[in-house]
Amino acid sequence: GLIVVDEEHESSYKQYDMVPHYHARDVALVRGKKNNAVVLLGSATPSAESFFNTQQKKYTLLELPERVDNAKLPEIKIVDMRKGLSKEQGAGSTEQGAGSDQQSATSEKQAKEIKQPYRSSLSSFLREHIEDRLKKNEGIILLQNRRGFSAFVECTTCGNVEVCKNCSVSLTYHLPKQLLRCHYCGFSEKLPLLCPKCGSPRVLYKGIGTQKVEEELKRHFPAAKVVRMDLDTTKGKGSHETILRKFGEREYDILLGTQMVAKGLDFPHVTLVGVISADLQMLLPDFRAAERTFQLLTQVAGRAGRSSLAGEVVIQTYQPEHYCLNYVVNNDVEKFLSVEFFHRKERLYPPFSRIAMIEFRGKKENEVSEHANVFSHLLKNSNGTLHILGPAPPLLFRLNGMYRIHILLKSPREKDTSGTHLHSSIRKTIQLFKETEYGKSKQVKMIIDIDPMGMM
Image (cartoon, rainbow, N blue to C red; front, side, top):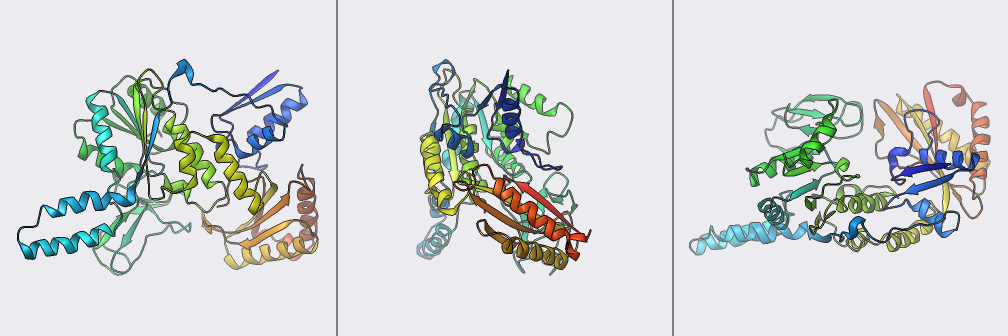
């Protein structure tokens, strides 16, 4: 028999909604072994764990060195967004000078502006390339992996940021209905006209979502037909397929969306792919952040130039020196992963360890903290080889009205290849924990995730 796991690197294969938190790829491997079947893991950007297994000769590596129909790889260019303002706004300010006093004032204004980052979501370089493709009637795909209009709303008088009443995250502004919405629990409220804390009208929208990019595109290219594809526009039955069909039939010129536009789309007329911000995922406090960014950017870059038409990719970033981007430009998976392995081996992260995340959650912060501390104490007393980090609050400390505390366990792979020691240590500690008053409590829930996909 044969089992095929397409895009095996996808984190969506991990089950989070119910226990056990299994990974479908791993289930496929176990099922294949049980039934003596071949398991084919397919991906242009394999996961670090799978590629490591090919190096260990546990898996056989099969490669496709060329694209379908020998199509050429797109040319990838990096735009340093830190330089955008000094080039564009500085030049624009010069035109206002008429006389020595005005010129002096203009020079001072330029000096201040140059120190600030570029304000628009579209650099002049990307705009020029979009305009060129529109004239040629060629397709354009733009990626911005954040929906909504802006990431958060901030009062410039007192610094207040509106946050979710259930989660420790800022509310995202959604333009059409003038709502502030939490993308984790669904809570929403009307956008206040004045700051709720100090009453100031000086409220700014910070960060860039797909709605804001869409608005800018329509302002710069009023004749272009833009379609946005994110969770907000694909809720209706068949809406996802309808958007893609109409874009393929040239009813739209520009397809703008979140990561769903990066996966498996094949449009021969698309010659330009633009990444509005490569930094959104790259800078997250997660050991997989660089890997996921490499995968996302490489996957979306592959949407350009899939026919005889030459493709081009423009990636905008405030971190052009990040090692991940260099390997995206050169389409070099192996070298990227070799660097990634170096960093992970230093810090004992997969594939050089087996890890487990133990989460405690409850409605009262002090109770959650006490449970986590007791469990951690028992774990440390009964174990001598595991590396234990925490207890500590994650980035999303409060989610859906529940406080969360994490304990991260690392078991070196060279001593615990199958994870047996990791599992037995957790089981032993659970038994000890159940004998305490905290282990008998039902106010705090304990969740165990073996091989977690994220740290947040």
